[in-house]
Length: 543
Image (cartoon, rainbow, N blue to C red; front, side):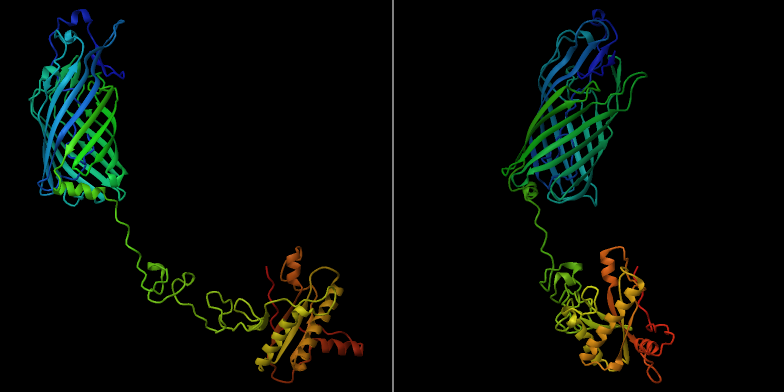
């Protein structure tokens, strides 16, 4: 006979049912997959790494009920499945004690309270399975691995070594015992987050007797488990549990499918303040082994005496994690930690916690002052005056505006030109400036050249009337020959219609005549017009 792959975990019969009753009885084994852990914070079938607190005791019952843990299905024919063990109600009486906060030992006495099934004649025994039976007494142990011992309320990695030893006290004929001593060393590795969520992994080796049951070889196994606990109402001690646990068969007969009894279980838990932990839930078997039930249900009541160290540890776990300490801000400016470049001086967030400075004392702080070394003055903005020197230029903040197609300066540009006059007055070493007129590309070259000359001359007259000595200013028009922007757009043409002020280098001898004076003299004499005098450093074209 072979194990079935159906959801009922059946065994396939190799012989006809009519002759099976006369066969020798098969050796029997413990079909109970449900082997819980007795510590209050263990995840039912999956152990967590933290041992019980020193000399603390936990004790209580685990009830489990499974449906169809062992059924047979005829290999051929129209007969239905035969439930050798159709249902089982089992009680595990458990007790655990902690030692030195590093280890714990426990005992599990399993009792089959009620089980039933159909006639066992197909495996060589007349009548149903025994309804009440004692199981294999199991001793458990856990030792935390140094460096991975975590407190109940702590977070981070944890690890421990475990050992389970089962003694042959169970009734093997009732599928409640293995008939000899079995043992299972294991490893626990888990991680608890600050939120209280726990993830735990169990793995190990399970030494079991080698038997053949209805043609299926059973023996040593590798148990495994993966579980999680998620706080739902942590302050009230209510959490949700989920786990997958089972064992991987290490031995199998040729052509036989490998035995992997496994279950998926979910549940709810309540850590009450009375020291009693209530857990209940259920799950499904995978249908891939002799010992996986279709359905299973469980409930437990684990008691920890009040006011013990373990009771206090669980109460600490129920408390939400404390809020993080307030950030250190010695100057109380709201800029915290490494972001505060001046931790002991009050300063705005915009200045990285450092006090604002004003190098030119114009009332505009340096972090927003576009001209931090030049006072803004009464008419400036963004920390810059309307006119200031920069290199070989007098830079103005606003364009000089003229009436359309005329050389008449609009009154809105008077303040800008007055500021240019002020700059020249404050800089007597500025020997001479060249006022340059430029236009956009609309109209002809000749028209734009003449317009730019007239506009530059208008600005020159304005400066002279504002108190600038006539010999310190010259004017020249360049028309559309020196654009700084693309004339294909309105924005570009607006930038090209401009007046610039270029500072002329000082002359060792007598000042050379201004370009407009040379041109006027040439026209008066009727001679050939000389080439225009270009500024010492023409303005660079903008891309």
